[in-house]
Length: 427
Image (cartoon, rainbow, N blue to C red):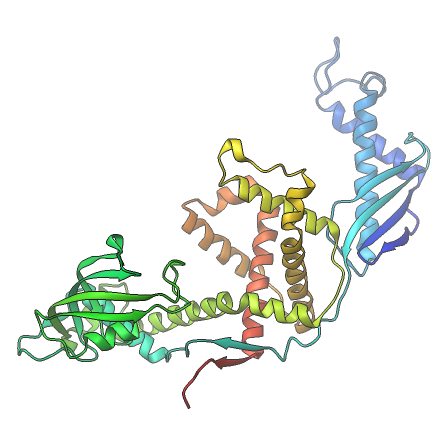
């Protein structure tokens, strides 16, 4: 095969003109005949024993089709081996002339590409957060205390003193927001830990209360709360303190740790530390992801392949339809529908490609072990076996998880490089 000619259609599209010599075309026909011969059946011959001449005669269309596919696949695979750009679409094939055995064959293959872009300014990001990250030792101690609570390592305080920091209290409460009681959020006999893990205003209101006391405590929910209906809202907790408990530290021993699969208390603390650190890193990536991508795209302008945008729109429409009733399904071919997603899809594609370019610039890669861990975690959460995912989706699922792991790794790297500021932080 001669070296292909490559035409630059535009910044994100290339057209290969590929010439397949007659010898390669003949070889493709020979392979096609041999493959069809294995299953061919003609009266008078056993299966797999039909002479090649009769296979060419009676299965001419099948032979030509299989030979064409082999000739194109083999030549295209060779043609793209030496290019210095990333191809991100399947090739659109146009044939010049006829495809015939024993004759040279020429075709064009048009593909979308991800051209190399040098991303600027990603090392000078400033990220803002409303809450200072808690000390890891405090988080470990808090988690151990919560485990102790669940494992009956709490002792009721009977001296009659008021609730204090580091206590655990059992309470009943009802919540009112905008003058309405949220019945679904009422709780009875719930244990709250006064160690910084509770809403600050609620915790401050409980400290100083005595057993049996009832109090109304106003709490402003932070913008980071998961419930959209509560973000920034002022709620009134009508709370009754049922009992005060303290931790029996003498029971936080190796026997206690073994109940949670650890060899001893030190091993349990080490496991907790690793788990909390991983969770903190994931939370930071999730918290800052949109801001990181916005800042990068504000500083960098580049073209993206149209096929990736269209594919992203297809997935968005399919996802929307999965949550709609049959009669209200969106038409994925309707341009008005597609245009509703176009700006979002363009930003999504640009963001992912920008992170990919940063990975290249920073030398960040993903190995098979990391992909396997992520796939296994996903499978466990979804209640399926990893091997079933591979069986159903093949190599595609591996590459999708590889991309996900790489994006997360780049975002984690960028959070580490960024200047993180706590808004309204007190000096």
